[in-house]
Length: 396
Image (cartoon, rainbow, N blue to C red; front, top):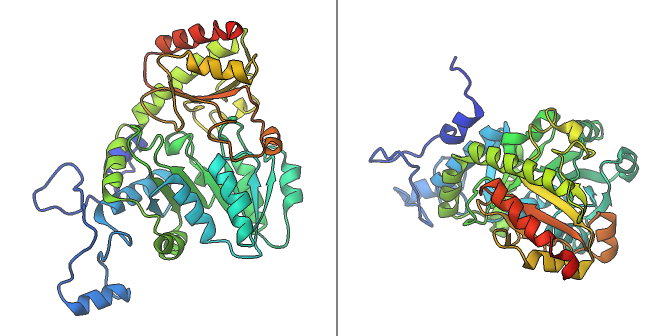
């Protein structure tokens, strides 16, 4: 029996490299929309599912397949499906499993477009959603109905970095015959594997850390073979949210350095979070790596490190908070995360603007909450940039 390989090795080698005539080391990029059949009969057999092989890139592509196999391996799942965007992954996975009259339990703090999907789009199709604070297990239990089919959450949460107990969620879902979905974008399988806690479906915005270079929009769904087949050949196929081969190729390239990048992101984030916690212009820092964070107990158990995203609240009003962003030099004002560059944004007016003011309050997204994605620059330069801008708050 072959010896099992470490995660860092699988980042580079997991998944079958598509056959190529010339022995290329890099994964070949199959930049083609369609595939030639040797005969019309062969085409018919492939469409009928009687013969393996590729038909049309929306239905499968060798480059895309290597990414799917690699991500399934990294998450410890049987299979995976690559999608055109992170929201394509969320929507395809949930809509393949929910129908009119079904009920979903969700965290009340999720990415803004996920919130809009659950509260606006799902309502149009008769899918009920109850949003709760998933750190309060009584709220989760109270939300359960006869027609509840699934539970969805992010952990850590975008943007306030709350962390939920995956072991409890997994047990709750299994006990009540619910399908469990976890968005693992913020930590990646390098720092957290939801499947280890009984989670059924793991979702990523591959735009973020998996790619790591800010030049791709993509998503990934990891689950059982049965679940991935359902998603691929229903919602993903018919709504067309499939990834391009070139984007899959770029993510495969980015994955090779995921471990070393995440280590640096985490190292820098811890230094910056410590600096912010001690600064008089900051009222609160939301970062699980800090001992003051309620979820610090999960470090080393559910998650190996706290990741590269920090949220913090300023001792400032809305106008001063916006001025703080505008005074920065190295940090770039931009949404997204996981890039080599450090990014900063104002969730209430940007990524989470689809929330109503009341929903933002319930989710803990205040007008003075700032989210930063800590990049790979030298930590002292980033701290100096923040310190300079913070010193100007009271003068703005």
